Amino acid sequence: MPKHLFIDISSHGFGHLAQVAPILNALARIRTDLRLTLRSGLPPEKLRARINTPFEHISGRSDFGFVMQDAMNIDTVATAEAYRTWHADWEGRVAAEEIFLRRLAPDLVLTDVAYLPLAGAARAGLPALSMCSLNWADLFAHVFGHEMWAGAIHEQILAAYRSAACFIRLTPAMPMPDLPNTRAVSPVAMLGQDCRDSLHGRIGARAGERVVLIAFGGFDKDLNAANWPVTLDAPGVHYLVPESWGIAREDMTAMEPLRMNFTDLLRSVDAVLTKPGYGTFTEAACNGAPVLYVRRTDWPEQDCLIEWLEQNARCREVPFATLLRGEMREELERLWRQTKPLSPSPHGAEEAARLIASYLP
Image 1 (cartoon, rainbow, N blue to C red):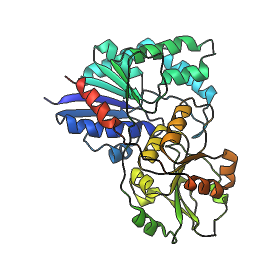
Image 2: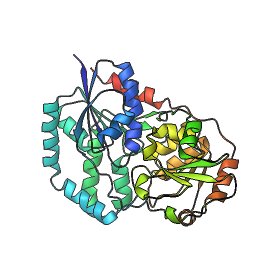
Image 3: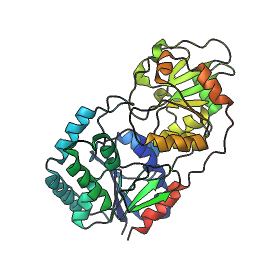
Image 4: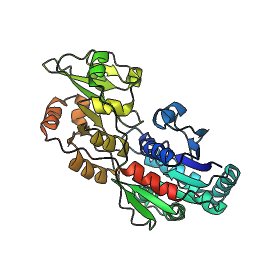
């Protein structure tokens, strides 16, 4: 009989999928008798673009993390209301999740990084694991810990995470001192193919022109890019931008119509412009892509990510005002002059896969 793994992937951006996919691909190589059921609010085509093994998809989301104004900023008022609503009948919500899981009857529950399925699994007597570089309990406490109403909610979130047999901390990760069940593994990232020549030909890049990928992890962000100055002096810069921006300029190309794997793009560009996030930071470092980043507003996870990136990749912070003006040429030149460190090896996928397999009967 195939062993049934139910996995819940957060749709708070694409970073959680970037963590899960390499691990599931490695797990499928270890356990060929695996049946996967996957719940996520991400589009199925996004999931199948990264997860190589077959799975049954349940469309839905059991966490929301934060309500975002955009890729950089949290809507704290809307998020506070969302948490109060979500936990208003927490016992009833957990009971419903227990019924759902009993009917699904998996051998193991795994989340990145929802906590409701962990609470439901505990009620149903099912073994459960969680994994991520962050957890919603720590982030919730960072933003709302001073609020009178937040204490009870925080305890419910913590109790759910503590009920898991193990929380797999993916390097780099937040410290998580309130979770006694953590196990650390190495960085998790996919490795891409170098398609530089093909990419330059498809976008019509001029000889010597540098290509910079703009990627903000599944959240749109208005960067005023249509008004950025065109770099005419050689060698020039060509930007790969989101198609949703609708920009038609000779020095900018929409990335989605290229239909290239994201990690192949990372491997093939001269730099990536992004915000601190686990998926893009680790994949950029492991694929040797220099990183120009803009700090997020009051996002506690970013400090450990930036510290790790500084040790493992060419990287540089750019002020947001500089970005809005499109005055990145000098920042990029300084980035490219940095000494390239040895790219880290993403052994974490295999380590996490072996750990997960040990919990399968």
